[in-house]
Structure formats: structure tokens, C-alpha cells
Length: 116
Image (cartoon, rainbow, N blue to C red):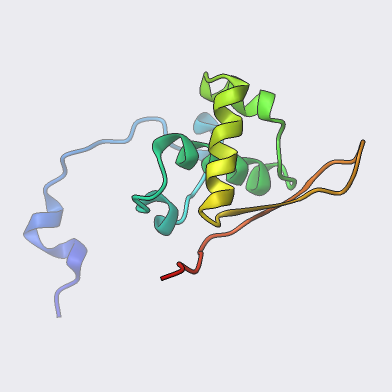
């Protein structure tokens, strides 16, 4: 049986990646396809989710400040807050408030159960 990558269709490249090794690219962030392909999420929510993953995977902690996410994405803190609320509404993020003066506890979900 022929492997998919060996077929003529897949042998014709139409894209080249330049400089994408771990050193020069500074790492990368993988995002689950369920997030990337969810039409209920807008582009900003997907970008914020990717930022959360970046910090969770590469920095061994998650929830960078909303100010830092805003800076990284070139957006305002107000927009980031809206996107965070959207992720929470869609079930991809759970926020547990721990009290005055304490940090919140955030849980990222890779899948959600849709209510019918």
C-alpha cells in the first residue's frame, strides 16, 4: 500500500519553511486542531488560547498577565479581556477565583462538551 506522503499529489511542494528550527524560531506552540477549527471561536480567542499554551508549554506556568498577552498580540488589554471571556463562555477556559490579592487559577481545556 502506498503511503499518503509518497503519492504524486503530496510530492509537489508549494511551500517552503525557512529558519524553522528550534534555535532560530525560538520554539513553537502547537494548538489542538479542535481549537483551530472551531468556528464558534473568533480569531482573537484562538490567538489568546495559543498564548496561554505558549506559556503553559514553554514556561511551565500559565496565565501570563493580560497586559503581556496584549503586548505580544499588539492589542489592548480590554480586547484581551473580551477574548478571555469568550474562551470561558465556549468552555475552553475555566477561571477559579481564589480571593482578594491572590492570583486566579486557570484551566485550559483542549475539548469541550457541547450542549444540545
